Length: 362
Ligand code: PEP
Ligand code: MN
Image 1 (cartoon, rainbow, N blue to C red):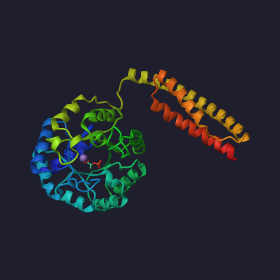
Image 2: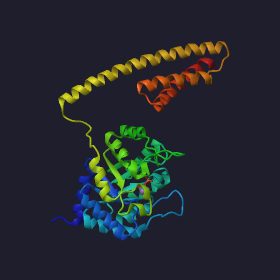
Image 3: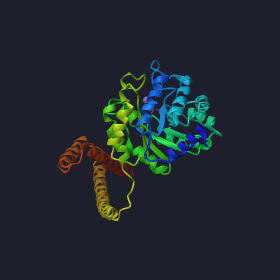
Image 4: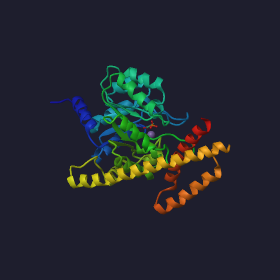
């Protein structure tokens, strides 16, 4: 007969390969009762694979709740025993790694405020040497893929074989709809760089509020993420940290039920044929767009020659406003958003300016 311990280690391996992988639990472990009740209610939904809880909370400002500390680890150990759910904790120092492993924590994650700091990541990595534990690495708070990649490399160099990524969005100054802007293109680029590495989406820390969790979770699934990490609490409004973004275990289950789960592919010939045809059309249109962009740049270069001869500046604000206005009104009719038209024209305009600049200064 297997012991509880080897049994849970087998479960961890099964979960690592399971898609979608669902991780949930409170932002922070607060009391023994809260941890046990959350774990039991999550387990009762039958929809959660791994139990998360913050034990040490890196807060941006001092004074808010900074985590219950190592005394919360036995509560998690108890929750694991009661429910059979493998546990997962955030670690930011080598000492925290040791403490977590002493209490049988099954998986570790490195938080966004730690991934930004190579000293801290190295300290964690050094403590991981010779240890066999899966580690998930959140993106750094700032949109820097090299830092994220660097953290993965440090952990991999320590000998950790099972490494995954968590996309939790990026901090930006000023008010946006999100607590941390998702900047999906960065997560997609990370997936492109490491296609074999699992990438989980964390709607809770992207949204910072409950009402848009489902939209972000659905988007992540549409983008072929491997799973979700969503914070849950038995009494979300009174949570000691991240109260606005947590949901009850039952609400979590409802949300998971209303997601349309998608696969990267299906083995249907007619689907593939239809897709191939449409992709052919896209290739065609892209080729034409390239041709046109090439022509546009040639005209811009001619304008550059004239400006040079007449000693006129490259940028005339009026003209640029005119281009934008024309494009907006055409875009509106074609269903192209102003945000997209602006980004597209900014890129085209910068390329024109660079070319004219080259002509002016040659
Ligand atoms: C957390 O998961 O509770 C947390 C602190 O997240 P992040 O590192 O993404 O801010
Ligand atoms: Mn949190």
